[in-house]
Image 1: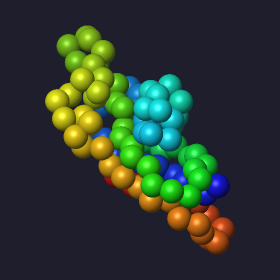
Image 2 (image 1 turned 180 degrees about the vertical axis):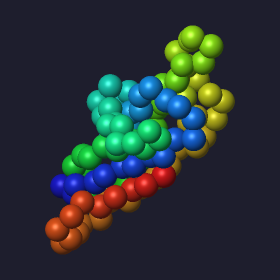
Image 3 (image 1 turned 120 degrees about the vertical axis):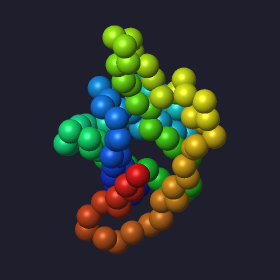
Amino acid sequence: MVRCIFRLSTKVRVIGVSLVGDFNNWSTASHPMNQVAVDSWEVELDLPVGSYRYNYFEMQVVNNTFVSSIKYVGFFDQVRTVRVTPTELPSPIAYTN
């Protein structure tokens, strides 16, 4: 297993972010991200060596209504791919978007 850190800087104000991907069956509840600054979110997880497709699930409030990024046109067209490789580094591998 390789310790990975996923980081996201948001351009709009969001109230929650989750990391979703084929490693967690695209679950929005499995990997909630921690807010580390006003516009920055982060989550650490251990992944086996391999390639994974992933994206960020963002929750916003627009006109007093909860809106999720998964409803945006093109959410699944903008899926990213990460390749986790074995490492001997003492610190985790970071993926920043």
